[in-house]
Length: 183
Image 1 (cartoon, helix red, strand yellow):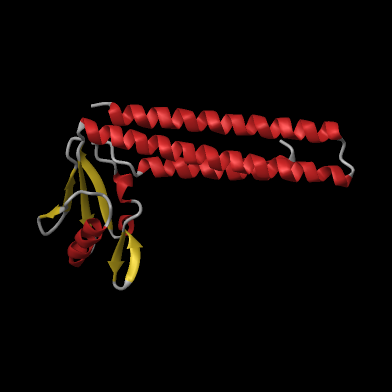
Image 2 (cartoon, rainbow, N blue to C red):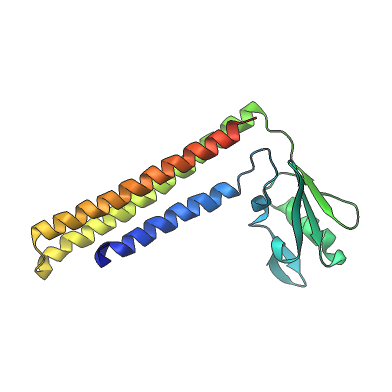
C-alpha cells in the first residue's frame, strides 16, 4: 500500500476498532465480562479498572462473578457498578459479587438494535470523513509535481480502502444485531 494512503488506512482501522470495542460493552442478555470494561473502582484513592482489582468469571450464561483480591474492596466495587450505566444491581455474599443479567424484553432488544445501527452509522461517517481528508490531501499533491493519473490512482486506492471498512462495519452491525435479537 502506498505510504500516502497508509495513514488514512490506520485512522479508518482505529474507527472500526473503536466500534468493535464499543459493541463488546453492549449487553445481549448473556453475561459478557466486557460490560465492566469502562468501570473504575476507587482503589486506595486511585481510579482503577475493575479487572485489576479482582477475578472476573462467568459461572453461568447470565451471571458475572467478581471476586476482589482484597475483600475490603467489595463495597467499593459494588458502589462503582451501581454508579455505572450497566443497569444491573450487584449482590454480594461477603466474598464475591454477583451480577445476574435479566432476560431482555423484545422492546429492549429493538432499542439496542437501533443503538447498534446508530453507532455503526457514526463509524461509517467517521470513515468517510477520513476519506474526504485523504482526498483533500491528495488533491494538494498536484502542486508538488505529481501527475493527475497518479493522484487518480491514489484516490481509487483510498476509495477501495474506504469501501472495505464500510463493508466490515456493515458486517459488524449485522452480527451484533443478530446476536441481540437471538433469544
